[in-house]
Length: 187
Image (cartoon, rainbow, N blue to C red; front, side):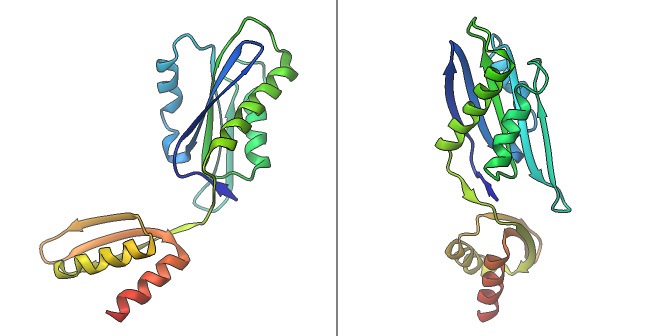
């Protein structure tokens, strides 16, 4: 499985219809369709497709044609995500109608091509399941913990400064978490 860690945008045009496709991590999906409709008030449609893993590691999929003929926009977009084995991502495509009808088949091909275009431009990475690890440290150990986290490339870090200790929550793949635990046991 593959995913992205940042948003990407690509443009695609067919028969004067313009497609602006946004590929985003699933965490950025909520509210994005409404924001795109506000940013593009003259656009005819904002179609989406998404795939993500739920808390039981099951793939959840959804799509919307947003007024396009049923099955002619969202499902073709979703099929490209499936074919590329993408997970924890959403695709949103803004369409400006160019005056020439594409037909349902032509429209499905256009939406699929628009999704492929943004995937070609995106920095796609191998998906690795992340786990959380919670631990405490003294204030004097903050720099040591940060040094180890930076050395291992663990960037999802939350800290809470309490009266006599620092409470940490970090997220990373299993290998990095195990390396981190080994490192802090050495010190």
